[in-house]
Image: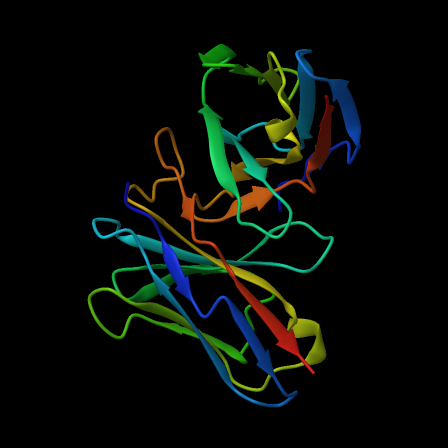
Length: 117
Length: 111
């Protein structure tokens, strides 16, 4: 069964450093998402991406964050200057529908645990 | 932002019993609802989706939706210890791109 993959599984970085989290969405999906989950808290939406453009972003997704689809298979999340509060699990998701209606299911990758020291 | 409310639990049920998980939401125009299961340290895994009022069954799982009461529930029949996890209720934002999640209900199935 096709699945979303993410690398690395765990990233440790120093405050102020840049990190890039990588995702390979399901191959025939066209809609891509990033979410994060701070330990003990709920899953929070960051950004959605379609046709090489951001379609929606949350208040969390400020100028420190960016997303890119550098090739036909990868989807990346960059954090330019990490803060302690960026420590969280980051989940990539993809869907083949994007309408938010019936049948639009988002499938999640295993996540990258980001630890900022 | 659409609010999604869930009792955090833990909800403890004996093996073989029915577990009932509930979720309420604030926005009457919400159309699509999802239940995800999340094991500790893992990613959300889709259990069921529901769009129409009434019940939807899939194996041991039944989702129930009541749009008038802004209420969606998940029933797990013949609960197994492997069902022990956090169950997340989610629905789409107005734009249809972002999933808004509840905080989840922790379920513990005891042998």
